Length: 158
Image 1 (cartoon, rainbow, N blue to C red):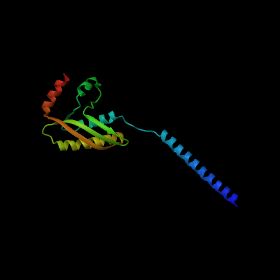
Image 2: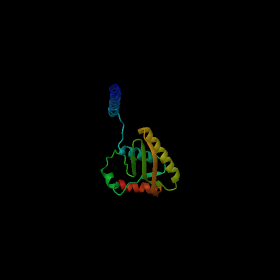
Image 3: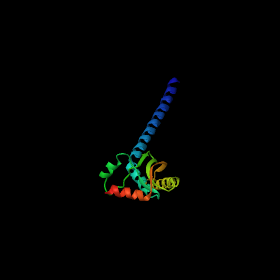
Image 4: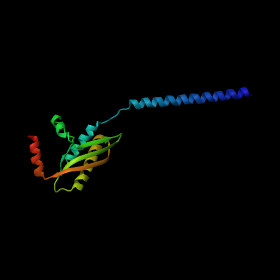
């Protein structure tokens, strides 16, 4: 009797082991398929560029202002390249966080400009990349009249 019981248990154990091996093989196959899946990804620079262009489209934004090295890097940047100074992003799997440093036009409503900047960046990033903009932070570093800005810009070009 004892022998029959042990044989039955051994058969059940083999079945469980076989099932486990099959499950492991299935998981391995799924992982291999995941590795072969096509992936679309973006360099952070691309997201920064989209945000910079979108921000400059908003009336009342005169410029984006970079850090202390922005003037040096601007000299070496390609003339066809859109400047991304004043914009930094953090990107995870599906989300984007944007930080901006801007110069706004004197007499314009900063809250209205900020609202439009958030809306424009969120729309453009989602449309072009499929990523979600979770947060946009904008620090106003200066305000200038349009005339002051044009004079300063003219001096910088010479």
